[in-house]
Image (cartoon, rainbow, N blue to C red; front, side, top):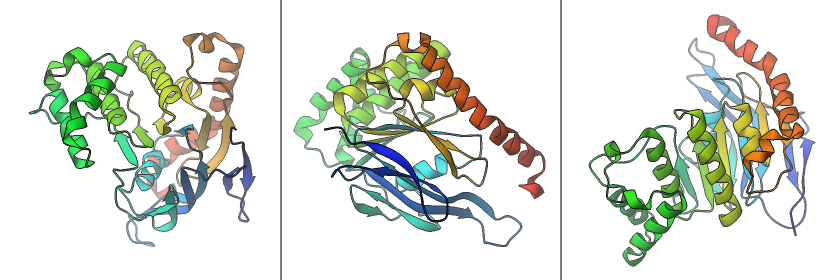
Length: 292
């Protein structure tokens, strides 16, 4: 039975997603605040302010907002790369306390994280070794993941022999091969041309349908958010708060035909209307840091 979700407000007015049914969320973000620098100092920055959100198992959630609103910071807190100044994150019911959880979470970053002196399949073996996967499974897992993104014939190539788009396909395949339940993706397609982004977006939608992974995806692209997401978390200008959450309501895998439907354009336009003032505020604060 599909778990139903709805938006609710906490006692202080911040947005929170509440899940119905018995299923516990894959990720529970509770009143997370993130500051950089000593509070009260001239260099102090409040990046996130009291963010609460539950993300269901098998759900694709996009974090969307103006530059500097804390999207990547929130992703890193969920992944255990940062410890929040206040609040907590639970993954699978266990507290993430500023330490990575490679058994539960895999990352795909905007920049390639492949070791250039190893071949593609050697890079995969290193990731699987780090995850304590039995050596006997390494090659089968690696090749199955590469095949899923059309890169199996490049297993013995070095990263510098691949185009930017091909390297991102490999990065995505590595996130598949480690078989974690959660995949965190920080603008993984940002450096790619529009055609390649569309193809990889289709691949990602198929991946979600086939594996049931929970995916949290940071993007600046309105169209990408609508095409990929089950829900879109729209964030305010810094300090990042949840402004609203938009439900897409389209099953995976998604066809490019979805982008031709009136609903796709309506959702994209709605997102722009929600973000327009936030983007202008972010731009103003960058021109005048003292007023941020």
